[in-house]
Structures are given as C-alpha cells and as structure tokens.
Image (cartoon, rainbow, N blue to C red):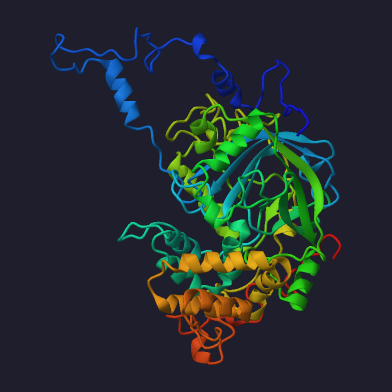
Length: 573
C-alpha cells in the first residue's frame, strides 16, 4: 500500500493558487448533490426536471419551453469524437515523488531531490472502440501527466518496449488494419485478413507481434503491467551536456496475464473495475520510474557493434549494458469523480516536456510531436489545455499570446495580445542550450524508408529461445494459429510464417502444423509492400513494391546514429 501523501499545491502571497485553474473545478467536483439547486444552463431555478410546457393537458409542446429545449439540445451534443486510437480506457489521480535524484544528468526540476507533483494516469487498449473489451489481445496505452513546477510533462507510453513500426508514415495505415473492415465492418476477431496482410508485408513488426501474441498480449488488468516510453529522449544537465534516455515504469504489483481461453470469462470493463476497486479499498497501485541512459558515443558504438538503433522503435536497449536507474515512484490514490471531465477529456502530448528533457531524432517520435496536439484540437477544441484536467499547476501565472477560439474560458483579460512595450510581459531565459542539445544535422532532403535486416530478428529470437518457457511458447503458437484461422488468404499466412522462420525454425514448424499451411523458406526470396528487404538474394526483390530505387535506406545505417553522427560531446563521451 502506498504511503498517504498529498500532492503539493502552489500559492501566491494572497493565498490563492497562481497557475492552477483546477481549483474552481475541484470545488465543483467535491460538492454534494444536496448542496446544489436545480437550474437551467443559464442558472434559472426550476421546480422539476421532468416537467414540460404544452397546449392544454393533451396538446403539442411549446417551442417557448426553454427548459425542455435547453435539455434536449444539450443532450444531442453530449458526445465528442472518440480517440482514433486508445479509445477504450480509464484512469485515476495520484502523485509522483523523486527518491533518487537524477540531477547529475538531467536538470528537470521534477528529478531533483525530494520533489513531488500531482499526476493523472490514463490506461487504455489501442485498436478497439470506446465500448470494446478490456481483455482484448492488444497493446495497452500507459500515459502519465506530471504536473510539475515547470509545466506539464506528458509521458505517452505503452505496456510494451517496442512497437509495430519505425517509419512514421506507416502509422495511419497500420491503425486502419486494427479497425473494422471498410466493407464488412468486422473486426479482426472475425476477419483477421487485413491484420495479417499488413504484418506480413512489414516484417520489422515481428518483435511486437510476438509480444502481442504472447502472454503479455492480455495483461491482468492495468495494475499488473509495466510501462515503457519506447522512444529515445535526451536528458540534459545544467552544464548543457546530454545523454540519451529510455524511460521505464515498473509495476510494484508485479505483472500478470490472462490466457486467451480465460479472457471471455472476464467483465468487458475488468481492468477499469479492478483499478477502481483497489483504490477505493486503499490498496493504492504504484510504479517505479527508471531510466536507461547512454552517451552519444555509446549510441554510435551500439550500432557499430550490435546493430541496435536508438532511433528505432522496434529495437530495445540491452539492460546488462545499460542498466535501469531508479529515479522515483508514483502511486494512484484517488479515483476520478467524473469520468468524462477527468479521463475522456484529458489530453497527453509527447511534445510537452519540461526543461531538461528533449526529443531525439526518432522519426516516429518526431511525427507524434505534431500528431497528438493536432488530434486534441480536432477532438476537444483549440483551447483544450484550458480544461481543468489539462491545465498546468505552476507557481507562476501563465501568459502567452494565444487568444480566442472556441470555448476560451481563460482569455487573459485585458492584457495585450501582442508583445507590448506598454504592458511588458516577463520572460525567463531558456535553461537548455539548444545549439548543443539539438546537435548538427546537415544534408539534402532525402526520401527514406527503412529496410528489414538480420539484426531485426535478434531480440524476438532471444524472446523465443531464452525468455519464454515451453508453456509460454505453446500458448503463443495457439494464439497465433487461432487468430490466423480467421484469415481468408493462405498467401498471407505463408508470408507471415516465413517471417517467423527468420526468428526460429521451431516457430515456423509449429505454426505450419497448427495451421495446416506450409510457409515460405524465409524472406530472402520475398519482396515486401512496406519495407525494403535488406536480406534479399536477388537485387530485384530488395526495393519495396512500387519503388524503383531504395533511397538512402539502402545504406549501412538504416537511420541509426552511426560513427561520426554526433558533432558535440555528451556526458561521459
């Protein structure tokens, strides 16, 4: 059980919270029903919510009945667009505290000794709609909003350390294959053809596919799963030096899984109910926050020696070489009072980083820096960050020159909407030297698409041969073959078995027996729609379908920071 600790608050000289627009909402969310008065939306008291005006006791309704029109018109507009991914989810509030300072390599205030801040966490599945099953075989989203003294820091993570892709433009295509078929409107639970079609044409997905179809594909609720940022970040210290970092959130409850056969016996809202009930009982779930770090020189050496690319979302960093360093911990100790206001409207952005944390050149991360705030503006509105759950809680009063737009609750009064010399705004110097942190990238514009290479199969091979026991391997074969039974194209199954054969002949042999389909003998004679084949025997098969030339991805680095990439020294280099 977590210690009972309240999150810190910030006050001005007059005792009010300076940067905390959550205050008024918090007063409202804690009000009791018996302390309120029933009114219309404009505050006029009404005698009863069910009454309506009509002509006589049996005549038509009156358009002048604002109470009824007000009620119905608002009801007609209650729903906002659901998230295009991660639609089904839940979460809770809590607090983070630093236990082991990281100030030697990261200047972020939140990682200084003894720092605390309030947080909100949202867990989710990825592909399903808002009413889908919590026990679906799917990755889990694991997002945390840290309300630090330097603004909000949003960690938009998953429960797996890798993902299905490393080329940013593939993401919309991949997600479309996780949704309903545009013709039949069936999910891949009934027709898995397009699901496996995409994967069998993009073999770099194989590591994530193995995790998905393995025991971790259905975690035992949200409390018993780890979180991984997946992307590489840059951690910068006060001297302007930086290192690469990977963030992990390790469950204090341990991990657990649900088998495919047992999943049907669970409530569709199992994970939400499990989290809610645990918090209500005072059994507060917690996670350790840990970092793997490496210098720029180590990143170059890692590629040269082991062909592990720190900018590749399908690769993992070896923990023996780059051990986890615990920084802090967080606990969830408060259930939400209103799901829509505090979970459905919460918005996480990978671009929200406090001073001391910077994005790397990971191309998928780079695309998410734009995509996430863009979709929030569409789904919630341009002023979504003014909503209480998204607002920062800083010791200073926020100000900028963003004005107006739909639902501008806090429009900054009569203060100038431009950089005024009459009423000047205060500034704070940037604490990070961007010239050093961003590095030097000089080159012409290139068209890039990654290629599949032998090193892409090392980590999934280790998963099969060294991590899983025989029972786990058997469950994997059963899960894959069962899912493939809904695939209507045998050619797709042959291709996917060929990809698994590059991981292990044992996997391919077992799947051939389970599916009754003979797969191809590896991928050396295959050409893919979505990926260059760096393992092709025939040069004609190397380029992805439709491309006459492979572009710069045919080089030796596949987008990795090879020797000489970094022009500036980093910590420990």
